[in-house]
Length: 257
Image 1 (cartoon, helix red, strand yellow):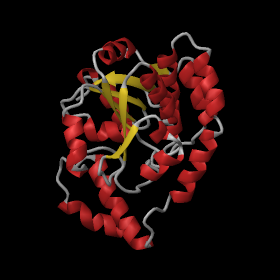
Image 2 (cartoon, one colour):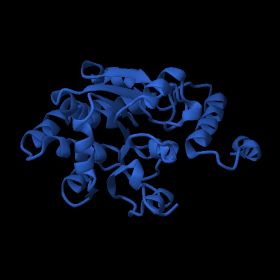
Image 3 (cartoon, one colour):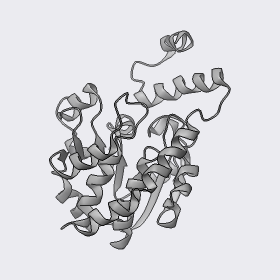
Image 4 (cartoon, helix red, strand yellow):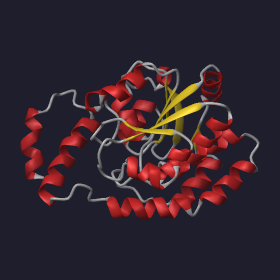
């Protein structure tokens, strides 16, 4: 805490939570002498959610709208977040998302935009959670879309890396790339040029999780944010309650700003 406190006066006033998180966890890694303090926990979550995959596929197969159901399940997976400080009850999150917990009112707009593009840039979030993301990617691929799935450039918290994506089989469905970001989210200032080129030329970007929202909420891009609201600040910005899942286009983030 003392090391972090000494850094704070040098940060810009408009520093995003993602950029701050990057600096905090650089200090943590330096003090611990460990590059990935959460590696074993991430592997455990990947294995745990992979065991749920047959059941999750069954829920989608029995639904009236496979893509919508897969998006709800992916949003439920966003409860797996070591940085949020909340209990991670995945079973409850699934039930909540499939019943009355979702604010996916912009699903029609998302599906309409999807019909007009051939490629989708999918920004992943956390380990374990990316097993849920596989369900959405599968539906997109079945609709004839080419999907690029994006992970972090290096380990931070329980955010998914290339190692996690390959472990859960994401590379069997999508082109898996790194954003280059070393922060707990996607912020342009932290990303590499190859990712930024993809971002700037994308026809549709599905941004998963609160960390990516915090880093991209001011960007002008064809973005749809899919996340579970986990803190009062983001709740106020989106004008939603904490615990709600939302699918929100960049043009309708809320009027709280």
